[in-house]
Length: 197
Image 1 (tube, rainbow, N blue to C red):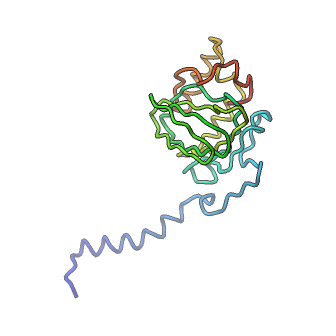
Image 2 (image 1 turned 90 degrees about the horizontal axis):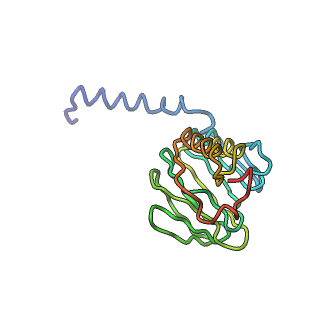
Image 3 (image 1 turned 120 degrees about the horizontal axis):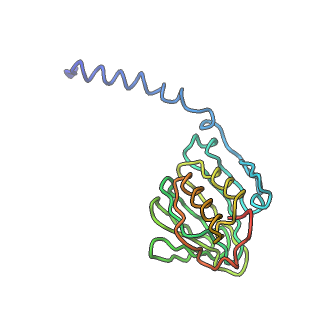
């Protein structure tokens, strides 16, 4: 039998003893399936108008804070203003439509079936560049972004240029670890006026 130091032996027993306990304190939500049927949202948005364009397929509670996942509908020439996340990394997958992403100084076309990973701290915006409605899957990591969507759907349009609205929009973005940096890819005249992002 090899000579094992007392310290290494105690360390090994500590790992064996503590490993099962790591799962005991885990939230129950992380140990059950989260199912969302077609058109079903696991997070109930207050704005019916927003709820018609977005469904939350996995909430932060479902994933024990690991991520939130959304299916987003996007009108033609629609997209959020330029912004930056300081908390979340994002992954987008185009289900339908032709999207354009502006990430830093680069532009990337994203047709149906394409995906893009956006690490936090990189300014970006995107839009459905096509002439028909499009759909995206959005994964935000860590979770909790459904709360931003809920608050944003209750406030002024993200594309508003009214000084009072801009003050509210900057405060909302700051609350969720983001900065609002500039206009969307397409002029606001093409943007939905309320309840939509």
